[in-house]
Image (cartoon, rainbow, N blue to C red; front, top):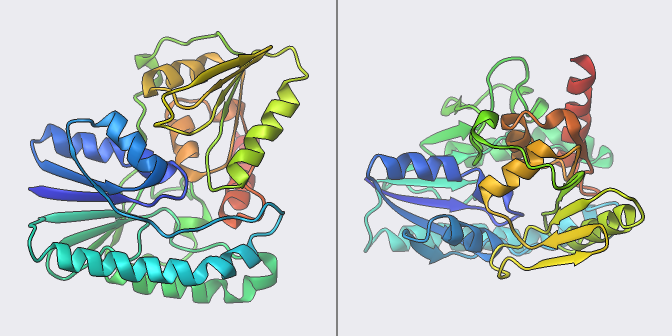
Length: 317
C-alpha cells in the first residue's frame, strides 16, 4: 500500500506516537509518505531519513503566558478553522494526481475524504472544558464526534479496560461506531531492552506550544540550578543541531535519540515533564510513571485532568 501519515504540530507528542505505526507499516514493505511541519517534521526526518516527506502546515496557534488559555483559544479559533479547511482541500486536490490507499491523521481534523480509507487517531474523544465552560462539554464532545464520523475508522491509543491511561478522555462517553482501542502507542521498547544510565539524578522533558514551552524550560532551570542534583533538560527542539550546553549541574540538550533518552529515563531518580498523553504512554512503557512529576501546561485542561488522573492511579497502587 501507499500510506500517508500526518501528525498534528502541537508539541512533539503527536509525531512521536506515530513512530511505532510507521515502523510497523515500513517493516511490512509498504510505501510511506510523512506530512508534517515544524519540530514534528524535523523529528520524523531524523527518525526516518529514507522516507518521503511533505511539509504540511498545521493550525497556527500560540498559548497565553498566563494561567488561562480561554482567551488564547478563542483568538486562535479562526486560524484553526481555516487550517482545517485548508488541509481538507489540500488532501482532496492532492489525491487527484497522487494515489494513497490509506491516510492516517493524528488529531488533524481535516484529513478525511471518501476517495480512500482514512484513519483518525486520538485519545481525546471528549474535550475537557474549563470550569466556566463545563456546561458545553457535552456539546464539544458531540462536535468532535461529527469530525470522527467523517473518517473510515478512529483509532484510540489506549487500553479498553479500567479507564485505561486516558480516563474520561476516551472512556466517559459512548464510543463512535467506527472507533476502537489499539493499545498505547510509544516509540520506546520494553525496559529490559535498555541499559540504565545513571549519569543524571533528574531528567526533565520539555515540549509544547510557545510561549509555555520556553517558560517551562526556564522554571526547571531556575528550580534545579540551585540544587545539587545533576539535571538533564531535554528541550524538545529536534533539528537544532542537537546542541548541548552545560551550566554547573545543568545540562541542556535540544534533542536526544530515543535509545539514549530511554536509558537516562530508566536510570534517573526523578522525571519532570508536562502531563501530555504521549509522555504518559512513553513513561508507562518504560515503567517510569512512578517517579514522574507532572506539571500541566497552565490552562491546558486536558493536561490538568491527566496530571490528577495519573496521580490518583499511582496513589491507588
